[in-house]
Length: 427
Image 1 (tube, helix red, strand yellow):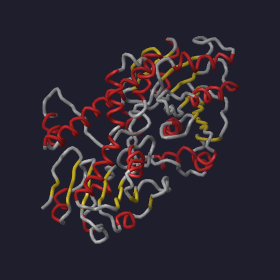
Image 2 (cartoon, one colour; image 1 turned 180 degrees about the vertical axis):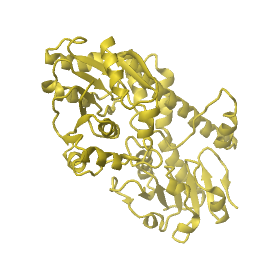
Image 3 (cartoon, helix red, strand yellow; image 1 turned 90 degrees about the vertical axis):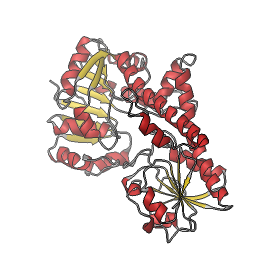
């Protein structure tokens, strides 16, 4: 049984994973190239937001089971949990995976296990990691064991899902898989399913691509519904009462480190075959512009030529601080192109990440002609008109997430516009 782990990459997946193993009695050394993040963690401070992470980090550090630095150390198991973004040309950027693997080569010893958790294109273990690990001089499958076990968690519920979700383990051979299953059984209560490394890589990409295609379908339905005078949210809700239908929900675009990225991996590998996948990506990537144009059309319909928009929400999903691939940033870029003035506010983004961002809701809505909801944070779901109506110049709100208390806003005299519904709701 492994006694010491070295986790490379202390972001939204790596840090909770490292802390979870430490909380279950293993000695863990965390590694990240971000010196600022490392220094924060050393002082039991967080550079990311995740429910339950603060107390678990404190426990791990206080018990002496979790150390961090910018360089790896010798260990029984190395877990690589680094980003795998896409380049501007929509191809996979595997430099982080490659460099992280190179960083552990001097520390790998006979009998070690190396696990890749990053979501990657199929054959990354075979074509990217193994050629680098070959430099250890160890024989694969007998002296050095390698697996892919992709994370399957959602921000905001990482610890709950690390424990309860089923997990996929794909080793380069049977012993690699066995050792990986043994390790994750330390805290995983869900079933652990064993396959080969390339299939495990494919499974994770399939899961996120399925969701992307489903969301693209919902976004198409939203556009069609607006043309037909139908409320897409009501239609989708009713359709989902069918026992074999599960349509996702529309929105201003798709963000995050997985759904907005992973489908491109398959498109890159098989562009002639990935037709539906590619079209779905294009559909979802078109939604920020569609949202910005609709916001401008609302202002135009009111005869407002130099309007001001209060954009609420920058994170890619509700109640987190993660802006990776967030469609909100693209919406803002399109508002800029349309010469629409705006101020953005997100209660979970503590540092200003964009030029026209404020840390104050009142500042965002002052003299605004339209509130544009892009993220369904609880703060926006619970927000009442009384908090903003006296500050605004025009009473109008455009809800792309179907999250506000519409009746309250209508009673306050607001024009309420919903993405996927051509009707403007007033009292």
